[in-house]
Image (cartoon, rainbow, N blue to C red; front, side):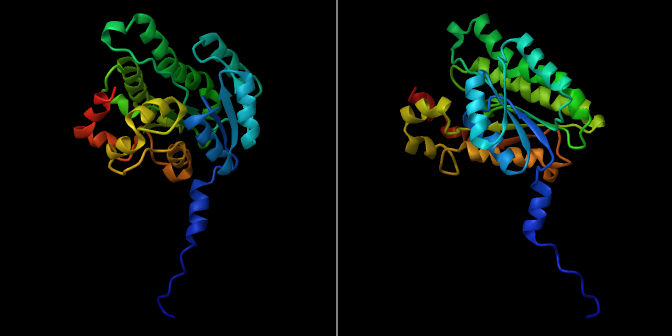
Length: 272
């Protein structure tokens, strides 16, 4: 028929071609549980080869076995251990396309107990370690046509909360580092983005969710539920994939609009 056009490619083919991670290799830090584990598992299911990082070898190997990945271990609070891990990856000339800086720590402390030691420990793991990992492994990323760094931040990188100054400040620094790295590394073809999760049902958050009450907690979130690690993993697959090939310097908030509903945020503090 005159003027007819070819039928569009099937939607599932489009999705597979844009979100497929086959042929790519990723390193996910803090991946033995919670958000990091969900991201590593999602990457494997999307076709990537994945290095699961943990602080200890035993947990890293156990997590890697469960999802069909490889394990690496080091203490991210120790710069010399980070260097040794990066040296091993560089010396092996392994392919590396994606770094997910997920590992993080939190020491709740109000101002009277906010010591220099607490600040230093928090920034060391949450801010300095991601920068060191990215800097040391940049030669591998630069050889990739799909180089991508994904930093897992938090909605508290811009939303304050009680007794959380060290954590919030470290994540705010990581967010600005993400944006600066995106500008600096863009010419080499490496994209840099962040994810800012909100209330996610992980082991770290289990106590506060139980204390406040899951139903009441969900009332504070416009989508009406606490998030799951898999919610964050879906966003990570998107940002690491060709579907986000022109996305860099962005922070993707994954919080069910929680951070935009702060008029009721005080409810959490009332239960603390």
